[in-house]
Length: 83
Image 1 (cartoon, one colour):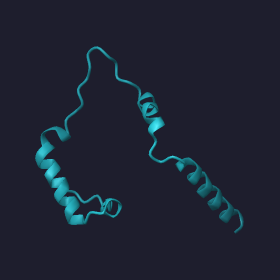
Image 2: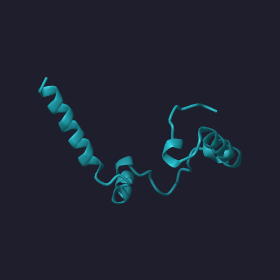
Image 3: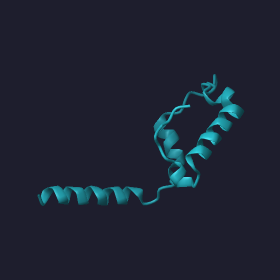
């Protein structure tokens, strides 16, 4: 198994070993379908990525994220301009 050096266990409260075990369990259960290509409809054209993303916009998990990023950008710009 690859080590992606992302420490998700800090986010969800699991140890690295527990995360590795969970990944192995998922691979054992669903390995035959995890890496499959999605089916392609013969009736409906594929939706543009922008349209797909727009469907989920109302359910944004990071409400207010844009404002925080803008504030951070402003702070960085101010720190550079004051040097």
